[in-house]
Image (tube, one colour):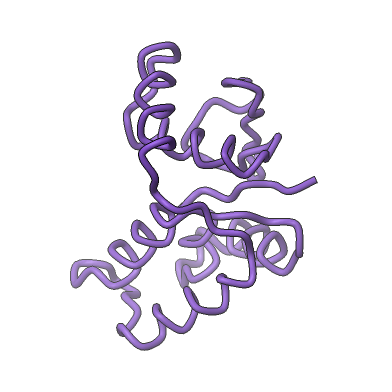
Length: 136
């Protein structure tokens, strides 16, 4: 079964914050697996957050891009009109923000039954996609 990884998984994998050590280990273990999927949106969000100048442990452009290229070994869902349309419907039906709905839509497009995220309600099932908080 392919599991979809949200941006926070990628960001925890690079964290140097001592308080996030356990989350970094979980994220690193998840990323070492083969049955993962991402979306272009997740990769974009990772780049923006990982390289922002106000981040204490900001990555240089080259390292962030290198990580993103390494993660291209996973299936990556493009942003398409179908994903956009589905996300808008999910937003209305679920009450999620558009951005979270777009993540769920991308997971659905890749036929993922699980979405690993810290940002959504653990155990909630949205349009057939179960939200799993791996840090619980």
